[in-house]
Image 1 (cartoon, helix red, strand yellow):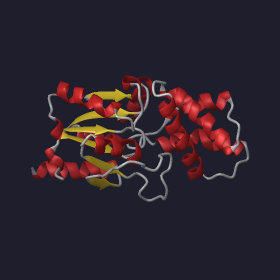
Image 2 (cartoon, helix red, strand yellow):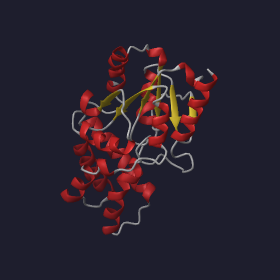
Image 3 (tube, helix red, strand yellow):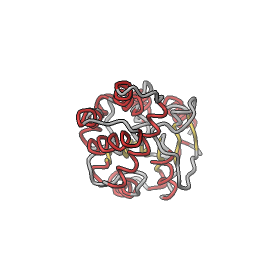
Length: 241
């Protein structure tokens, strides 16, 4: 793959640009500690990830704060630890507080000099607006779960890319998808024939974290441990073109 062969980069946001696991744990950890639970951070994330994915399948048109609260309630039921409405609402409203990865803003700024940037996000518009204040980037298009009434790995976000590309005046052959989650992003990208780059944020940790293990066919064309490494490779490819 030559990164200079593409003009549009579509990005997953949460897990790739925004550190959603840290954000989620800022609520799950004190809740578990309050209940005296011995569960580790990875155990909490794994249980939560299963339940969030199921909540999204069960209520594809629900806004993300409701999904977060519902998933938290389901996680409590799974673990045998009650989740009060107060705790559920705390997680539901937490998206704007989730931190960006340290390299995200600079990497996006660099990439924006050579590529059009598109967001494909499993959140609501207001939630992404809060996160984007941490990223500080003007995206060329933003597609949220609220817009398409579904959550990845459903096809809706990727179907919407056709309209985005038409508006941008860029052929599909010049599109590259960039994401951390194999389950949410690389599986549907494969279905749609879109080449993809894996930002493997968990490369130095075992397990899948808050992301379910991928259950469908997937492949990645390039892999990087960080957005900084990806942006550096893109700059080098462009300079050599």
